[in-house]
Image (cartoon, rainbow over all chains, first blue to last red):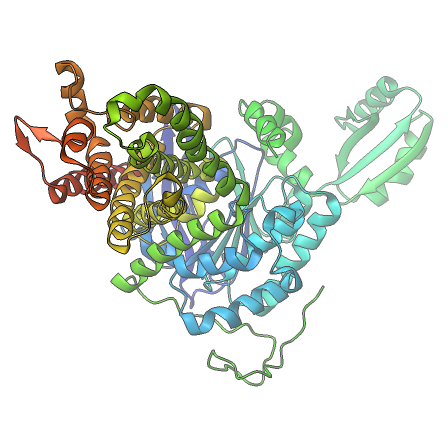
Amino acid sequence: MSEPAIESTSPAAVSVKGLVKRYDEVEAVRGISFEVPAGETFGFLGPNGAGKSTTIGMLCTLVRPTGGSALVAGHDVVSERDEVRRHIGLVFQDTTLDGYLTAEENLRLHAELYGVPREAVRERMRQVLEMIGLWERRGSLVNTFSGGMKRRLEIARGLLHSPRVLFLDEPTVGLDPQTRRSIWSYIRELKTREEITIFLTTHYMDEAEFCERIAIMDQGSIIVLDSPEALKASVGKDRVQIHTDDDEAAIAALHARFGIEATVVEGAVMFGVPEGEQFVPRLFAELGQPIRSVNVSRPSLDDVFMSYTGTTIRDAESSNSDQMRNVARMMSR
Amino acid sequence: MATKTTTTTAPAPAPPRAPGQPHELARVRVPARSARSELRAIRVVWKRELIRFSRDRLRILTSLIQPFLFLFVLGTGISTLAKAGTHGVNFKTFIYPGVLCLAVMFTAMFSAASIVWDREFGFLREMMVAPVRRSSIVLGKCLGGATVASFQGLIVIAISPLVGIPYNLGLILELIGLSLLLAFSITAFGVMFAARVKQMQSFMALMQMAIMPMYFVSGALFSVAALPTWLAVLNRLDPLTYAVEPMRRAIFSDLNVNPAARHALDPGVTWFGWHVPTALEAAVIALLGLVMLMIAIAEFSRAE
């Protein structure tokens, strides 16, 4: 699963072996191993409560592992904590800005805490603020910023000390779709400008697509790790949705004629077949049930998640015990 | 998006890198940890306290109301009652050092309380994950609180002529020095609790519970000359006693108060009959502050 792969010449930015985190009775992370080569955009995908944030917490030296080891930028997260901290940038789910300071003051404070050379601070600050489009607003109090602007500012701050690895824990959670898109365009632009490894967690499928490789995590374990394309290809089936007058009869007919197991998802009969487009003519000819509409789509990461875990990411989330915590987090926003 | 490719016109302070690639952001190199980087961290945490205090006009204003209430409402009211016992000393002059201490204490306490807010709003995390020692963060915080609270003290010192204490540089410096020490110790005291107490309501309740008894026992509002034994013992154990008494002593000697009045109003702190000198009193405050600072540092180093 964790082949050194791709660029074996450059040292891994993140290297994890048998990492475990146990809270009393609960094993939040159950011995995971993987490597992220330098320069890659790597994503952890999974429902809330899958162990993504705990893992990122351990890699960022905020959570002490119960077992296993992890190297970040070549340094051990337990024994060389400060070395790790110096080489990583962090953007958390919840804001960690001081709202009573201006954007510039927040960045200056960060520069001082991270020991950025004085003579470089101004130029570097200008670069990161221009990149995220907040240079003109540098004198404004952060409290006057929108959620999206705050998140952008946090990304800029995370980059200020030129980290080797930028950790983004759910970088777009709680933002509206338009702001999410703009955050992503900044992240992708960042890749073209800085030699940096980006390590992120998300529970949005569409965001995982932006990663070069993703690890799907569920219940504390990595289920599968590969590029989004390879993962989707591994599903091997296209998704077909049909609307019928009698869903029960259609499902029975699908089973009888083609041996296909179908289910009703969001008001449509859904099933997976290889080569979906070529199946549609046969479907119309042989089903013997009136079909009102048909929709064929290539497998998405939702389907990948479904095929590896047997559940949709949304169902996996609603069954998780930390649901209340997420509600609480949303309410406190 | 506003991505102007900066064609570095101004004399760039950073060494220009890769002239062919204006796109590339110049990487900054973060040096290894050193005493200098710790000092920078202490300084910036201290400075943040100052910036935030200076922005909070309402806080500066409201913290002035209390000293005025004590001096001019309570002071005027009680002075009619206490006239016989003050040996001609203005009652407001008498309680002035106590009022100065109260202003300093409350400001210092609010500074410490901001750690609880910082935790609630997430900013504490930004400081806790920085590659610097926790002790630098805590020390910067305590120094910041001390500075801000002394500034508040300075405002109270500025109104001293209104209660019959004319300006005198020597006296002012002594009062400032003692205010600084007190402010530092109270901030450390608050920070020590802020490491453990995660909720603002609980923190404030705890602080009130600690500060009010300390204040009443210290002799800020009455003379410790003829107290019953139990109160005299408590008085000697109260750290605030060692801030109020030297301030009062300094003011009285500056005003050349007659010996009879001094004896009645400011007998000085005694340990088993031995008069504790001002320097030792200041040392008591400083020592307590240092002990609490150490505890606070230990608490924060253990956290997370």
